[in-house]
Length: 235
Image 1 (tube, one colour):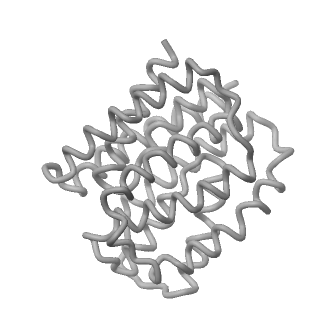
Image 2: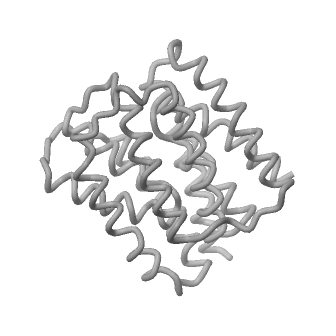
Image 3: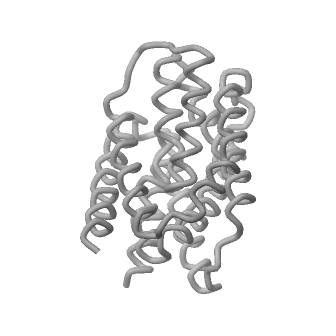
């Protein structure tokens, strides 16, 4: 039953990311952590997230804003292996609590938004924060989404640019963490759910506003992250 619920969360997260550009790990992460544990859940979420990134980029790769995202990406890629090494000995319960907290804070940051452009320095800081959140909870999106809002990235090109960023970051994160130890059954169920959610999201992309999809995504993410945080603290 838990795997089935995780599959539903993965499908909803994939649909949300296909529409708004973020949301997969925020929505799917909490139940993946419940099924696989904190460290393994991040590995699984990273692999699944890469599939979503590739699916979106297959349609929209021509509009990626490479120069705008470069400072964020370079900082995040450089920091990721260091963060993995630093966090390697942290207790799993602590990782779960951190992952839940990161998801809640990330959802709140994106919901609050801002309009100030912090330039290259802000991009580097966003990359470092994003890398930390990605290693802890495969949730590197909020920091970059907040930065992109302030930098006024072209909304019509934002979704594709975020997917290119996430794909590069997820590749380095996976190389640093290692491949997940999931069964063929678990992988098949979750990938099937992911594909279904991506197809639904692709069809909804032109019909549902990104703002509305993001609002629903953030509510689901905050609820799931809070549940993970509470269970880790209580356990």
